[in-house]
Image (cartoon, rainbow, N blue to C red; front, side, top):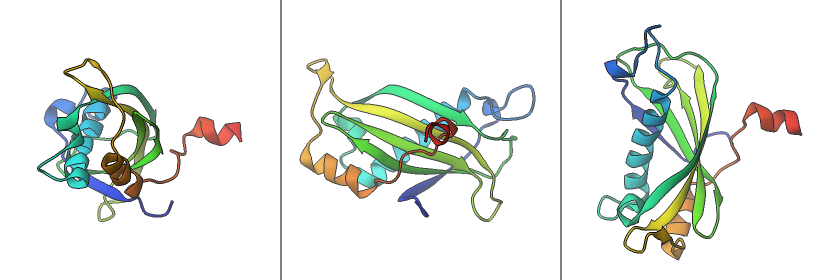
Length: 151
C-alpha cells in the first residue's frame, strides 16, 4: 500500500514522556486511541460515530521500531482497516514523522475492535452501512516483522 487511506496528526503530551526523555511504550496505546477517535468521527461523521453505537477493544499488537523523543511537533498516525468480519474488524496503524519533519517510523500496530451492544451486554453484527465505511478505508495487512519472517 503506497498511501494509507487516512491519517491524523496527534500531539504529544509532556506526561507521555518517561525518565529517558522518550514517549513511554504504554503511551503509544493512548496515541492510537486518540487517532482512532478522530478517525471514527471523520469516517462515520460527527453526528453518528461507531463509538457512540458501541465498540470495544479485544486485542492490541504493537511493534516498536524506534524511540520517539518528546517534542512539541505532533506525530502522524496512518490508519486503515485490514480485516472486516461479522462483528469485528482490525484497524492498522503506522506511527511516523509527518513528511515535513522526517521519515522515521516509530511503531506499527493493530487493534481488533468488536461492535458491541451495551444495553444487551453482548457483541452485535456490524451493519451494512458500517461495513461499507470500514471497507472504504481498507488496505494491506500490517507488515509486522513476524509476518515477513513467516513467508
